[in-house]
Image (tube, rainbow, N blue to C red; front, side, top):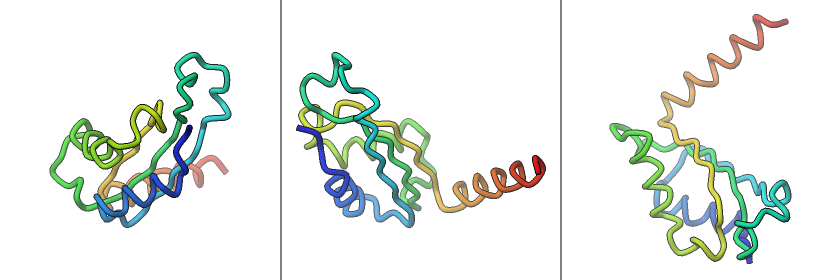
Length: 104
């Protein structure tokens, strides 16, 4: 049984106090995939939290995985994580906006 994205969001909110959080269920794109046979879903998480400050990318991913530990592997089979501080996220969005504007 796959996790409800709302459950993932609630666990991440409680553990990491994000200022921005988006959970996308990508399970349908992986239907029939042998690893999904257990029923666990595939998710993509964008999370912005000041708790990531001073931590490496690997450490940030561990923080997210630790917050969701109870859902692995029965409800989550695969998880893509994009974890940023507020400053990093704002910089990322500014770069994207500049790139979009230069292409028009």
